[in-house]
Length: 101
Image (tube, rainbow, N blue to C red; front, side):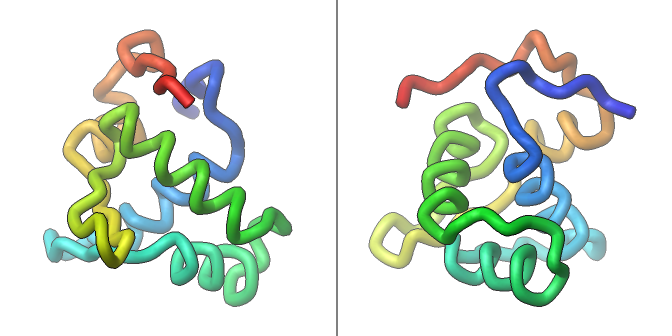
């Protein structure tokens, strides 16, 4: 089990794990917070948090370098190499700085 970054919560892990699951074939997948929320909350039933929570958390994950906002107008995000590194335990939790809110 990987150590959780102190400022992160279960929604952050669910978001990153969802992106990693979709990117398992090395295909770059870009998704909006609404699509991520729908899949994690409605389809998977893995959270009961609001869409606005997912949007805010994805923005914070991007500021921390774990996601990348690839299309600002459409609010599309992708997981980064650092995001994969965190999930695999290759990046130490202490190396991930808390983003300015």
